[in-house]
Structures are given as structure tokens and as C-alpha cells.
Image 1 (tube, one colour):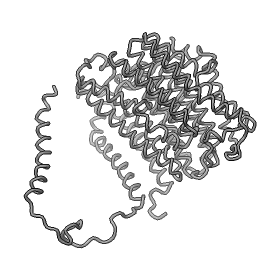
Image 2 (image 1 turned 180 degrees about the vertical axis):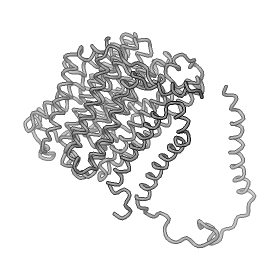
Image 3 (image 1 turned 30 degrees about the horizontal axis):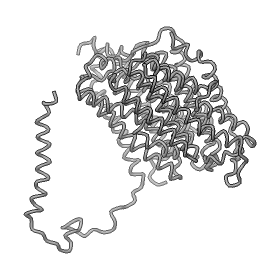
Image 4 (image 1 turned 90 degrees about the vertical axis):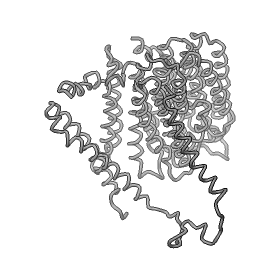
Length: 486
Length: 124
């Protein structure tokens, strides 16, 4: 090896690369810092500060990319890219993690000795999400996926004393590692057919051979598993219900947003247009299953899990629209907007459940919300706002998200699919509005008394932040779309 | 392109056929005896004592995982140590050394964490 090539190998980490990876490195250093704070007795009080500080510094680096006119683009030998879209995704991941953490304060009582480990694992998760949306290479995406999934496997089983939590952890781990294996196998087949794993390389390669199609199908299937699309949605209700609720909030929003980000930005252009009808049907079936499943649930966490399945179906319709010829940038922006609104809405909804569940009690039955409007008007009001946003009522982020999603379908000429999708969304209102009815119109029940808990300040702040973002995404869309236009 | 893998497919078929064929042939032709001790886990040697499903301390797993962690550390350090002079000659010795120090520091913090949490003490 000549002198120049060895030295050149180190120039891969140039200025653009350092800007692009700064948020990731911040998270890495932050996790270490958190662990140091945990083992040095004098620093133990600063653990919360270390967590928030890490997130805020990483957020600053993402905002720096978002605000800059010149984005880093493709860096590190074209394996990773950072632009306004990935930066906005990154901001959402970081805020979502911070909110989930805020709800976890005061949530754990029985297993409190391991709360620092919980926080350290949670702090590591957004690094995986950011790596996933920025990945321009299947292996880099796989590393991001594992970086996100491994902490979540542990966190899902974090309430060790509860059998549901252990079941959730085992189920998520077994099925999740199966999906990871499918991703690797698919990548191997794609590599066999094309000789490359980088997305730009694959865009130029001929992917019409049966080997390549099988590989792409496996990759799509593993992503469908992660975002819980029919027929890979079976694990969702059990895992979401069994996991500790703050973890569910992170799992439901972060994984979905990161996997859809990669799916729409990188995988969608590779999929053949002839597959669009299949994906559209999958999306519609997912929506129908999610909504009909949610209608019959009496457990709120399970209901929200099915609702998450339905939302994944809606976003899959965007993928179908993009495959069928809609503007790719438009599809990505629609996905991003939908996800921004969904992350804050779902995190808030799950967070409020966590708030009511604290003290180790299980207040996730629908009936336990009876008369909540009288006993806890603030919580009931926030819950009503989140339900309206999940249902897609105008003036909330959920409405505009759905609007942009169905616009992509219309843009692709899939009017029929859009109409069926919109009708299925109306079905969803049935169970979202039922929650509001129970809270506001039914008297408190004696069988399921309304929860009486302490109110951790962090959870209150988190709820207000979620509410503000839900309204902001509904009323001021230009705030979020402006950085993407440039 | 896939046709290149034809011989491997034939090999797989032969391997599976050989294994299955032997089982079938010995089942068909073999002499069948059933005596006390035939169904034991070990046909020769000492009789088994107790249940095989013992509860092992979780500590064994912890130690094994920690061993792998620091095993990998040394695996990465040795190639660097061997080629450090080469990097020095190429003018990138400083960068590589910094990277190695960073790597060891990360593992060092991990070790300090495990130590502090009592992961290294056997009796707890």
C-alpha cells in the first residue's frame, strides 16, 4: 500500500462527515458519560442532567444541519447522508426519546434499582434511529437497526416482576431477530444479483433478476415487520401491552418513524412499479385490521397498539403511491410530516397512560377513564386532544398528516385506494371518540376507580410539549415544511 | 449465474441422502434388542446421577460475556500493535493511536461500570 492511499483512507472523515455524524457521536459519548455519572457517587445527582444534556447537544447538532444552507450530503464513502430531511427526522427522534424518558420518571417503583440502566439504554436508542434514516448502505442500515433494537429488547422486558413484560421482551426479541435475519438474507441476495450494497449503486444496477426481486422482497418484509404491517403485525398488541408504557411510547413512535424513513427515502425507489398494487392492498388490509381490531379492545394500551398498526397501513399507502409514480420527494415529505405528528400524538397518549399507571397499578382499562374529565380535567383534555389527532380531526397534526398522505395517492392516480383509505380512517374515529365519550359523558365507576397518582413535574411538561406540537403541526404546517423546501 | 451453485446443490443432496439413507438402512436391516440400560443416556460408564436440568448461577453467563468483550479488545489491539510501526511510517501513527486510546477508554469505562456494579465479585 502506498503512502498516499493509507493517508487518504483517513481523509474519509472530513468536515462534512464530522457535521453529519456529530449527533450520533454525541449520543455515544453521552451514554458513556451517563454511566460514569452513575458509578461516581458524587455525580449521581447529575444523571438526569447528563441525559437531558446529551439529547439537547445532539438536538443542537441536528438543528445546525437543519438550519444550514449547505448540507453535508453523502459522506463516509457514500454510506451515510445528512440533509434537511434526516435532520428533521433526527430532531423528532431526540425529542421523542426525551419525552419518553420524561414519562418514565416516577413510573418505575418496584424495579427502581435498575432505573439508571433503563435510562442508559433509552439514551442509546435514538443513535440507532438516526443511523437508520441516514443510512445509504444496507449494512449501515442493519447496524442502525440493531443499535435501536437491542436496547428496546431489554427495555421491553424491563418490568421483570411482571410476566406480561417478560413475555413482551421474549416475543419482541425472537420475532425481531428473525426480521433482522430476513434483512441480512435479503441483502445477501441483492448483493449476489448486483454486486453492491450501497443504495446509489443499487439504483444504477439491474434489479430485474429473480434473485434480486427475492432479496428486495425479503428486505421489504423485514421492514414491514418493524413497522407492523399485515401480515407481520401479530406481535404488536402483545408487545405494546406488556412493555412498560414509557418504553411502548418510544417503541411505537421511534421504530416506526425510523423504519418508514428508510423505507420511503431509500428502498421505495428500488421497488418495481408493478409491485404498487400489492403494497396498496397490504396497506388497506393493514388499516382495516388495525381499525377493526382496535374497535373491540377494552384495554387502552392494546387499543393504541392496534391503532398504531392502522397508522402503519396509512403510511404504507404512501409507499404504494410513491412506487406507482408519485413525486418521490413529495412522498418523503408526506411520510415525514405524518411521522412528526404521529410521534408527538402517540407519545403523549402512551405517556398519559404511563402517568395513570404509575405506582405499579394497572390503569389501562377503558372503564378506568370514566369520569376523568371531572377528577383530572387537565389529563382528560390532553387525552382528548391526542385522540382527536390520532383520529385525524382538523386543527390537529393528525389531520394534515393524513391529508398529505392521501394527496400522494391522488398524485399517483390511485383515487380508489385513497377513497377506501379515507373511509377506513373514518372507522377509526369510532374508537378514538369512544375514549372521549367515556371520559366526559360517563360517571366515575366504582368497579374501576379513577387513578389517584402523584403528578411528576416532568410528565406534566412532557404532556404540554406533546400538546403544543400536536397543535403546531395542525395549525402551522409551514413551520415544519419550510426547512424541507430549500 | 445461479447455475454455478449446481455442484453445491448436488453436494447438499448427497449429504442429506447419505445421512437419511444410513438411518433407513439400519432401521430396516439392523438387529433390534431392548434391554435394561439400552435407553439410558450413556450405554457405558457410570449411571447418571441427579437431574441434568440444574439451575446455574447467572454469574457464569455474566463472566462469559465479559470475557468475550475483553477478548475482542485484545483481538483488536494485537493487529494494531503489530502494525503500529507501519502506520508510523505512513504518517498516520498519531491518528491511529488516538483511535486506539479512544477504543480502550470506552472499554475502560465499561470495566469501571461493571466493577462498580459488582459484576466481578463472585460472592454477592
